[in-house]
Image (cartoon, rainbow, N blue to C red; front, side, top):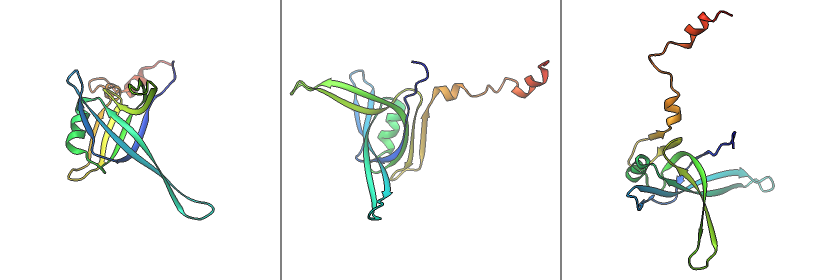
Length: 152
């Protein structure tokens, strides 16, 4: 369907150390839970309220998995850009269908930035081939030169 977009942007803190797993094909993936919070003031009591949402994040990009494995621990604050994905499977014990919604960071159009982490400096990793390919070519003439030659 043309004109659709599946993009998730989050800033939050890890609730536990990331889990790194080896897949059957030999590649690694990283999984972690990311907490985001909304705060507001209750109109009736004037009391400050807070609601925390937990997001499941899965990283399939090998380079990002290595960064997560080396530098990210429980409590680290990160910024991510990825896609929302829902998996479906059948529970072997009950035979019922189960669903899991996750934010997935894959090969391109994914961003992972460490905003604060223990024992590390701020690190930004971006894998966005679309942005890289849309940068102007250094050897091409500027667009201002073309405007001067248009006859109308």
